[in-house]
Length: 184
Image (cartoon, rainbow, N blue to C red; front, side, top):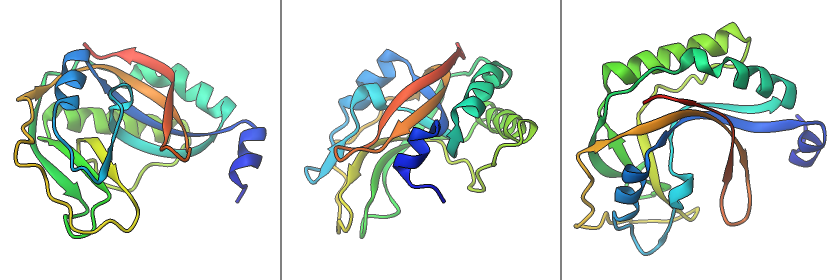
């Protein structure tokens, strides 16, 4: 396994495919209060991960970016369900806004997984659970309380399907769009 610096020097990127919320959805989500012991995800970094890919060589990421349009299709507004701590409130890692699984999400998940297989890329074995991460807790955090006034807007709207690269930093991961296709 190559270390991070070696992968970066050899043109590797840590990548994932996600839906980018529209400006109104991002604005509504940044108004949702988060626990004081958590670190809010900046509004420009809010996304709904469709699949995590992991380390890709730059040329493979370019091929995936070129093929991304095959997975894009218009999405109806998606219903928010609730705010939750994952994996739970006893030892939280994330504060997330969950969304109801819809036919559009099922179809998108299938198209993205099919594209990954077609390109010979790894397929994320985890089940697709539509959510947007609002905040992150420090490692070892215990006993989170979801703010009582953490109310979500009724729906999320998404503007694009994006292939992101992710760079890990002390302040948290930073994402850069490598390719983007409209889903409106």
